[in-house]
Image 1 (cartoon, rainbow, N blue to C red):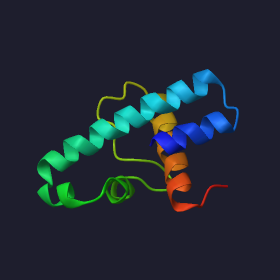
Image 2 (image 1 turned 30 degrees about the vertical axis):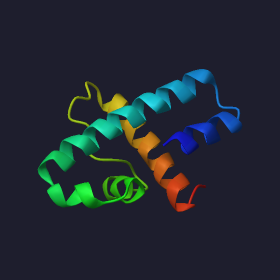
Image 3 (image 1 turned 180 degrees about the horizontal axis):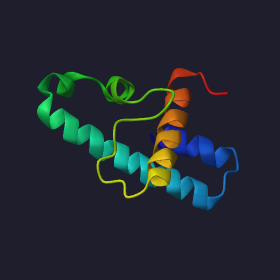
Image 4 (image 1 turned 180 degrees about the vertical axis):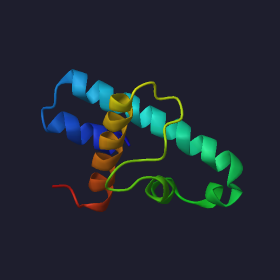
Length: 91
């Protein structure tokens, strides 16, 4: 995830954007950890494979603790951008 954040910085995104994206990636990490707790097979996957298992072009796994729909949409957008970065399918 760090190379993705560094790419955002290199694109001259604002500090606020980079910080908010980092926050959403932190949440994504928590959701992946929650799921791997129950899916022991996932623990054998590489970090990249594990992330790609849980995100797609439209977003990430359900964020159980999101308070607002808008908040979840922003999280999904960050996950989608990460997916594009990892797969080389960025617009």
